[in-house]
Image 1 (cartoon, each protein chain N blue to C red):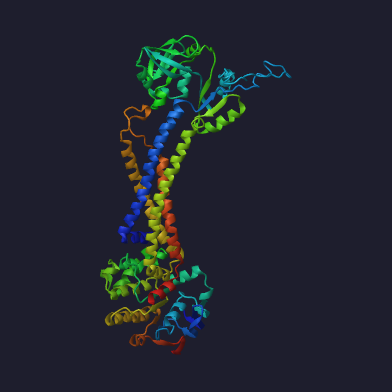
Image 2: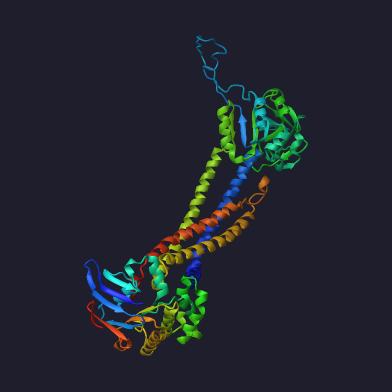
Length: 416
Length: 220
């Protein structure tokens, strides 16, 4: 029935072209919209995952209460009557036994790398300009294995911060804000002890303004000294072999430890929920377009069934079975879906390419200056199958009704 | 090879209006039979029941000793494809296909397109249509379309050919030509031909006539 189905389609060229247009637009729209949204998501996720870590272990913040000192200051049975009970954060926002964690992480086959960090808030001063900053102390070798910071360096190398020597790499926006440049010295003050001088050995741009204007990387020992907390570690940043298992692994570790363990997506729940909303909007839009295209196919094939009643009768009188007749229309839906899907892929690819050439920002770190568009092959596979399945599904009902037509009913109605 | 009709009845509608009221007949192999009668006499209904397209309300039709009512659907389809040919009043050619492709359609059903191609061309040649084999139905006259339809009904070399008012939509010259083809087919191929007509002259070309009056055989 294939050749007859093709002839049917060719005999009504205008309708076929219009139907194809609907499917092509549906598939192309899915590809273009998905490419754009996923491109954006990939860019953001890349920033979230690779600039920081897959999993972050940090000291669990504990708040003091009236009972917090029981046992340590008061013996059992003694009741303290507070005029103002203790409150605020406990002054031990550090990981209690980092060595145990690091040993355990080194043995874990799922862990690709782990980097101990001390993260402190500090004030960066250059000349008369002071800016609040987040100073991340780390061992550069380990940090480079956990994050992709090296790729975002505009000048200098990340490894130049070394293991000590008061050297820092800072975000480009921060450098601009305080007016400092490479090889110049800024002062960092953590609120403990005196401000200390640090030489800028590199400038990076992550492409996220809020991070670029507030992040400073330094050697962990230098930060420990700056904060007057020698050998203390506040965080351990971890890179896993398989990033997709981050949330699951973090949740398991969280149950087993007194530290707070969070995967990159758990710590950015807000952003992830925006992505989910985007996905819902994207899928709803595309499905709507394909439903419209599907209705087009349904209408056109239903009309064709009505117009082809005589032919159906004669085919049945020749011994063609109901299934043969159904196939005649199913094949038409399938062909429309197949051609519409393939052409839709090409058009979608073209749209995506054109979008990826649009300049959006002069300086976006790894993302470059153009719009980020995803060319993930799964988008194309999904678009193709959406077109094919929706077309085949839309042709199912007219095909079924055609198969159910009895030749004698058609002949009788034709003769009356 | 014969058709036996036993007490065949057919009614239509919820009120079971009888159209055929107990038809009994036997059609022998190679017969050239016309069924005549006024409009509403049941002649087309009788043709469609004995050609398996319409089920009877009661009674039996036996073709080659097999009861139609006892055949499964697959067997009925195979029977229609290989042992029966149909010619309708309105030609019913597939408008997207050429004359030759139309003739070959029954063969396409069973994958015999290539095997029957030569025979199809031969048939078209026999009916003076060989040079128009590649034309679409829209490029043919009514008489030519009917000749293509007759060729199509014969492409599987069926034992039976059923025709419902085959000349009903043709002018006198083309109608006569179509009937001449039927006569020739019956004579040369020994095909059993059963046709419905209300044209007296064409009915008389048959070797036997069945005249229906109000759903019953009035004369044979």
